[in-house]
Amino acid sequence: MSSLYPQVKRAIDVVCGGLGALLLPVLYVPLAIAIKLDSPGPVMFRQNRVGQHGRLFEVLKFRTMHTDAASYAAKPLTNHDDRITRVGRWLRRTSLDEWPQFINVLRGEMSMVGPRPEQPFLVERYQTWQRRRLAVKPGLTGWWQVNGRPQPMADHIDYDIYYVEHGSLQLDMTILVRTIGAVISGRGAI
Image (tube, rainbow, N blue to C red; front, side):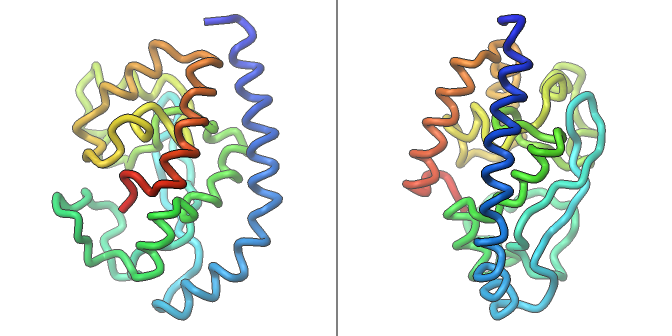
């Protein structure tokens, strides 16, 4: 790993996070209207997630679930999830629900690339080897998202460990480019 990699990675995070945060107000109004018309409740979803070195932080998302859905729960094994609203399905398919996380990136809680931030109740169940995924900041996208996205997260921590062990600017750029294709195609999204 290059000695400049952490500084370059953070510079990319600040530039991309800043651009994403600048566009957030443009997206917010139409998405807020759609979310409110589809189901009652707040527009934004905030939840504690586990970040680098096990630190908790509040992840930001556009709300995609009904307000009576369990705060922390494992994803159903089937493709149909009654907890998700109609607009929420579209937001997830287009990955627009994740857009507010550009603010998390700008704050330094997340990075553009890294393992997705996990829910605390799942991290509590980690075996020692699985905790290695917490060595880096969680990301908006990661090696798992461009390789095995349809699988349940708990089944493929190996992708995250691979990223932790092989993180580089080249790997980050590969993941970012492949993410654009995955988002455009909707591959693996709910």
